[in-house]
Image 1: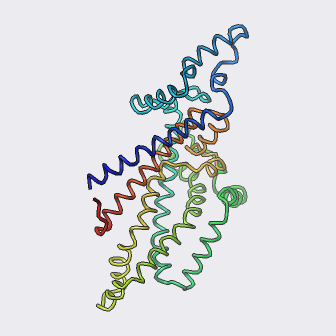
Image 2: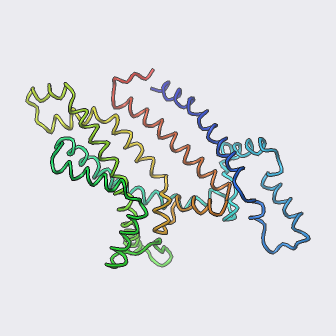
Image 3: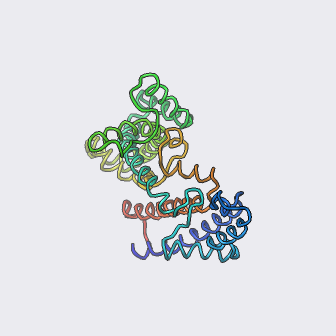
Length: 324
């Protein structure tokens, strides 16, 4: 197993290097000048050129493109420095700290609710294939899969915030004015609508994926053998079929775990939720090159790590997979 993990990590290193090069090249093609964005508006015209060159040298933009790339990678890998945000005028690490925490809180709630619903529903759909329960959830999945997330979000806002007045329209809890249990209740009220929106959108594909994996497992010869031995239906479903269907299902579960660090730009923007997705949209709109490429590099590392984790989980779940 250790040799397999090392081999997979070595294979993924060129992938990450390729991604970093592509991101860096794209960042150089983006319009706008980060140096001009960082210069204060109060600079006198006669001092502007000197201040511009000083800031350009400070950011390392006076070096060649190749040298800029290696300097950027050295700062990230060795010093843990993701660069300086021209839009927010502070280090990138400080810019993403608070939004990342908020995104993890939001996605943790979504993932718990998502797994609680998706796994039992998908299994029952496969067991009750062709029933009213199965057909009803298939219609639900097709409908929600076709609905844009912003439309669903706005619909929920109109019903529960504007019409009924039960929940806040958008925004974040005010930690400076609230504390203790009041702050917790405020968090719950602000999280309900975005959590419900993203959970409904996520369920659309997941329950069909789990259903198909279970149907494939239930059609195997070993299931007929287990039933012929007189085993109860619960034992057949959960001890035999579900365990063997875990390989495709584990892909979803691993993705759910690593999605804790990924934001949802559209939903966060609609609800004015200060998460990592909304921060990325703001950075793109503000042409903050360093913040954009640093966040995309983080997302790439998370996705590559998720792929590695999924491969390892496959080997742990199914002993038939030979990790050599």
